[in-house]
Length: 443
Image: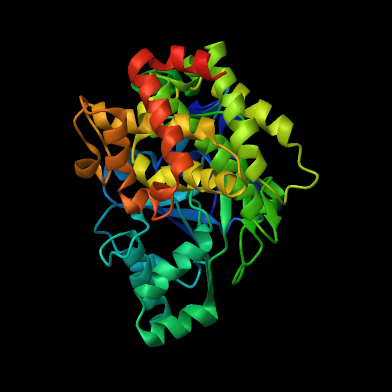
């Protein structure tokens, strides 16, 4: 029997939704597993904490009908398992498929907040893409005089609020741009929760726990964090009552997460050869490499975190990575590396080089990426055709070829002799002896 409002009585009372929204105040673009395990839960908890039931979510799928097909027959209910706790989340009221009228929902007066998890590659000047659909909705909202709107990027981009605002501005005609400047804010935010892709085993486990079939279930870890720039155009859910941190400047937290968590994830994806993150971190030698990467190369680039226990945070990351219950697939992390590497590893490399330091551990991760994109049988990346190369080429030739891609390495890193030498040395070691021998030689 399928999960729905009609069958919710079969679910144990403690596992039923915390709140039942009676209006839709939030629109979310990109209603994948991460949103359902993160922002949707904060929104439900905010409604439960305040009794304010106006903040139901309308989720919009950007490229596929899969989520709509899974959630619509379930009245948009779905289960989340975090550790050993499983319960049904009820904050999503509606799911739009590609082609549905998103502009109508974005221009509705009751909509006050828009959130986005559209992945890094979707942040581009494409009138037909997610940003274009958002601008079309803003145009309809301006025409309807529907009031102010807060638009929050929840994607792993540095300065994601400013980045989104600039892309929106590029697609606005002058009258709309003036309206946006007066009525719309784009706060930055940092999100943190590991959400692996759901497997059939996860769906079977959720059905056993809930007592009904749930095709929209997601699995995550107990840890969750959301830091939001406190710059709202109008009303909002009481996310701070649900554990979100509202701050004046998100950037220190954003850098911390992008570099320590996401940077480490990229290193795991391109170096470990493991199928799951927990398997990689279960190797003491590889775990030691991650500690050196975080301590020696990444932590020195972080500031503005006075009072924050960075050592404890790094230890918590290693513990989260080692959690075998998550089954976080390395292949999932490896997707779109050309879009992720710059902010996760290359920017901190630049800062270390500028300070006269040698970012050897970052260079090793970059060398791992170079070997990965050269030899991978299947490569999911918008620059895939330019990344693939002759795996028989020398390390120096491979480094020269890939460093020349300015969209990834900029104009500065290819000319930095220290960085080039470090990456070439690491790639030569990987080619000659593999990762274990390389780590033994470097540590």
